[in-house]
Image (cartoon, rainbow, N blue to C red):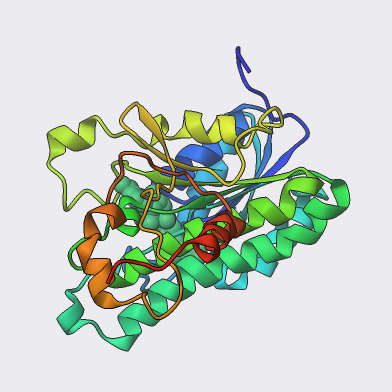
Length: 306
Ligand code: NAD
């Protein structure tokens, strides 16, 4: 995949494309031949209010540059309406970038149900509704490319973001399952944890750092992952920002294997705790069945030390 990647004849739906990362994706894909649905609810970064302006500005910019785009102003919670816009305007959908997002940062002690519920609704239900509505089209045409958006806060946790972290790590499990279900239909799904200057980050990072985190520098990774030639990376997790791209994976310690009988006690575990957290001979599981072999081995063992 070298040279300039093109998406001619393809339709890309980008949620939350009225600003930040979403706008960067939308203008890029339009400049490379895709027809783009620019979705944006147009509210505040805390998820308050709505407006048609954010999406309209991006659509006008794309059209002025000679590209094709239509606006959609629905909340991602109504993802079916967003996909319907793509079908009505362009007759198909090839690429879905679940990017829309908000923050309701507050320490866990002070978190209200409303802070939790809104984050779950926009990030988890939003990504679900868009992907669910696109799925029948992807399956029928045996082609689809999906990007879901996680966050470092989801991978590691972050003070004041219990709601956001939970929703963002959910994007990882969601992507891993869609990747497994979509593989035989050539539906490829990956998840990114981006870092970029946007209205979300402008209040928490110093200007000199933001200068080096242009949203445009997350775009090339997404461009590669949703290109038709990408059939290798499916269900993968990537971190991207400021020119750095890295892949994440699950790592399991070689672990402690005890016989599952009466000898399997708390004190037996404490005695050999170092084996539980010994990463010197790690495994890299990628499916639920990767655990079954360990269970079988455990059945064959003799009694555990007490
Ligand atoms: P942003 O606020 O500039 O963009 C998010 C866009 O989503 C906004 O234009 C907003 O109007 C739109 N939106 C919000 N709720 C919506 C809804 N219900 N329906 C439709 N549109 C809605 O922020 P950004 O930094 O560009 O964030 C893009 C994505 O990347 C988000 O999912 C965010 O959580 C994630 N992310 C960003 C960073 C970063 O460093 N900027 C880090 C980790 C994750």
